[in-house]
Length: 405
Ligand SMILES: *Cc1c(COP(=O)(O)O)cnc(C)c1O
Picture 1 (tube, rainbow, N blue to C red):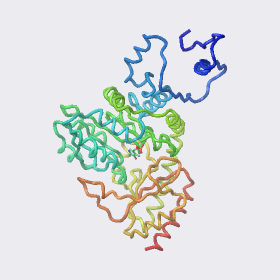
Picture 2: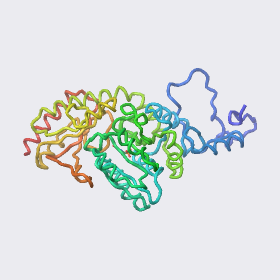
Picture 3: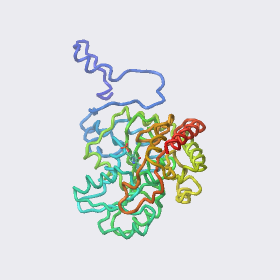
Picture 4: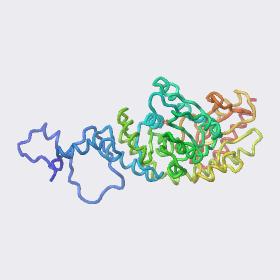
């Protein structure tokens, strides 16, 4: 019997000692629950000095429980599952998608290094590069998401990371990830490719089979899937696992097990949810494409999308987030449209079961490419509602838009 299995049985034990020691190893008999237990922990106990030393030696390893900051069995359940689903060597939970971006980049760069980031990147990732990395002597350049030659021309001997996102935030350009990985890995110097795979999830894009070295996810979106928790995941190849885990350990990131449980719960239905998100997004796009007040749609699953061929070649499906460009209309029209929507909520984030709509301004973020806008743009998230109801909501909102013109 190990020390921690022992239930104190001293008949003279005092009340306060009982309060601290009883009930920690309940003697439940019978079967076991479907779901993993939510293990809350700061202190992890070891039975022997030898076990403690061994766990300490492996503390940066993905599935060793050593101290609460590194996660418990609950975290390991999520990490092992997500890693397997995407074909990664390992996965690590961090407190938000943006924390996942930061850990992934920081694990690969040192002072004096350089990284290349797609101009279509999620804006807070750009802010991290400019507001944080720069002050520590790491320089970032941006490249045209669709131009491999532009990327190649901007490589320097000290370029350590090529950062990608497919499709791009707000504008949905499909990057050619295998081609970018080929450019990175053909270099003599060590250059890693990081992909923000939030849109496709581990279900619709298998990063590692396409050459990616580190894949980051805002688990906040489709993995949690119910708009009720913040979470990031960093997925790694065998080669990048140690550096990522070391970096997260140094930074002291820790995630609460209740949020991890919500992610595990959400993950179980990822497949059925994503199929419906995709169906609904296609239904909305098809309807929107037939309207004279819509000028363009940005959704790689559409056959006439410029990224369709690459998407079809590399991806196994599309999620529910897409962009819409309207025919030129004033601010009053857009405001009337958004204010009148009843089923589409207005708010940041996406990936929950509910539909969303926000105005977007891609032209404000570009630095090396120009966003050739024709009219105002929106980002829509197709939730799991009945598409007929969503279309009716959009139709009445277009009525308001046209009345306000
Ligand atoms: C939301 C998002 C993030 C950041 O995730 P948080 O959990 O909100 O920090 C990162 N990348 C993409 C593409 C996102 O949409």
